[in-house]
Amino acid sequence: MLTRRLKGWEIPESEATPEALFEGRRAWLKAALGGMALTSPLSIALTSPARAEAAASGYPAKANGRFALDRPISAERLVESYNNFYEFGFEKTVAGAAQALKPDPWTIKIDGLVEREQTLSFDDLLKKMTLEERLYRHRCVETWSMAVPWTGFPVKALVDLARPLSGAKYLRMETFTDTSIAPEEGDPLYPWPYVEGLTMAEANNDLAFIATGIYGKPLPKQNGAPIRLVVPWKYGFKSAKSLVKFSFVADRPVGFWEALQSSEYGFWANVNPAVPHPRWSQARETPLGSLIPRSTLIWNGYGEFVADIYKGLEGERLFA
Ligand SMILES: Nc1nc2c(c(=O)[nH]1)N[C@H]1C(S)=C(S)[C@@H](COP(=O)(O)O)O[C@H]1N2
Ligand SMILES: [Mo]
Image 1 (spheres, helix red, strand yellow):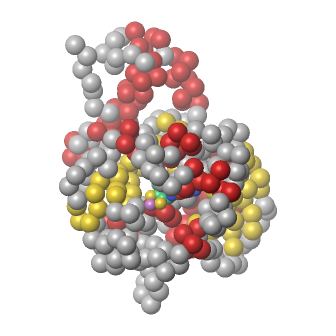
Image 2 (cartoon, rainbow, N blue to C red):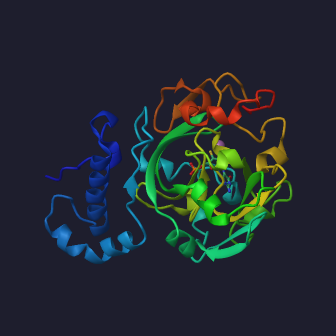
Image 3 (cartoon, rainbow, N blue to C red):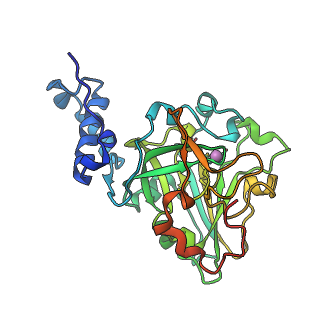
């Protein structure tokens, strides 16, 4: 009989040490790469080339145990089949269309108010970064939520690489544009490309993350391959996918959704159950795969990390 061992991130939080998470995931990955049951001793011998390849690309990365969850990890299958990626369509079922994306090779530009502009390949950027895994909650303004193991590096590491000048007040991020790949980008009713922005204080916050992977492997195309933003204390639309440009700028960037409908989507977009969106109360959320709503937390539960950033900004529209 085949027994299915829990993946590292399926171990209840209370039982898992960071090391246990890491070891559990490694064992799972070996088995998955070998396409064999974990219980077969042969899998160890037969997976060497695949294991070497995965290891060379930095997966699985060591878990950073600082970011604990208060809920179960969402099913990988759901996270990779229920998506928002408007470049490929306005439904949740865009994963098929997103397979047109070509994340390899991928060029990234770092420009604006920096000591020296840089154009580098995604592979070269990865070589300069140390990958880690973090478990984060994600809250979409449409009131669904998920909890996922991302792999990547802090946004701060990218800021340090960029060496911004003192005039840089914001980090502006831009998604690829190519209508031969993403036909929706030819729709003139939308303000393409998809753009998002953070203040420098937000970008340098410990929680702000650049993801290159999910569930212990590189990002699937529909989740924003090869590189996306992950800012879990903000509504999901801030976490822009498939980024090609990081610009350090003096003026506040206008995001895709803000440009489209500023009365509904602001720059800050921090999660707050007490501030409703015109079409959705934000008091509750339904986790992917669940039928039972749960209460949404202010800052999506990340106040200990981020609340200080907003001291003195109480007069701003911080929560929509
Ligand atoms: N480029 C781009 N990034 C995007 C979006 C998008 O449509 N295009 N949708 C956003 C929204 S609304 C959400 S909730 C998350 C969804 O990420 P996921 O599909 O990996 O769950 O991506 C965000 N990033
Ligand atoms: Mo979203």
